[in-house]
Image 1 (cartoon, rainbow, N blue to C red):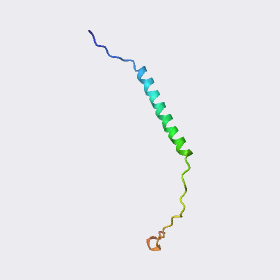
Image 2: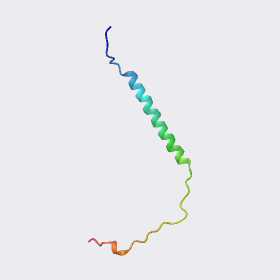
Image 3: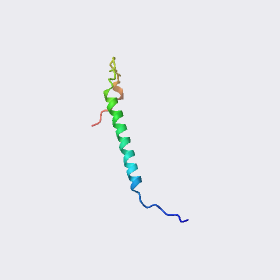
Image 4: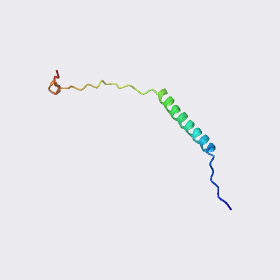
Length: 59
């Protein structure tokens, strides 16, 4: 019984291409559905008072 090395990589190339296409479609689907969700806007304005002491004048 002789062992032989498979040198044809056509099947694996097709498999990798199909897997990458499915992953890309899955990611695009997630982005599409996240875009459809209406997230509520914040009701309160966020303001932080920064004292003038922390600013340095650079000339």
